[in-house]
Image (cartoon, rainbow, N blue to C red; front, side, top):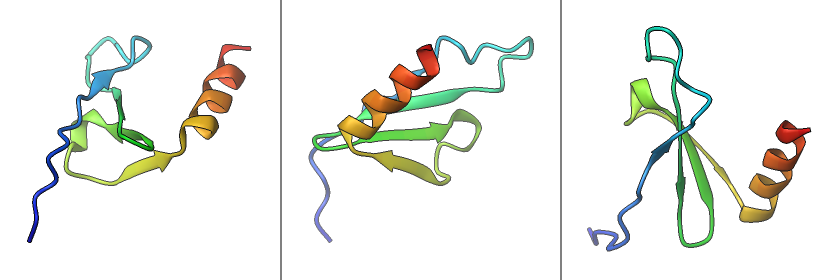
Length: 63
């Protein structure tokens, strides 16, 4: 098995700071994709989007 040399840097959303601090969404930019995960389940499922889809999502959420 080959290990991927690219290490993802996960960032917590600035909008994910609930009163208990446990409702967090994290985002990481990969070489050709943007990954989203639940910070409570860092080994759990991840949503993977291409950069254009992510940009469209962010633009939509901002409006």
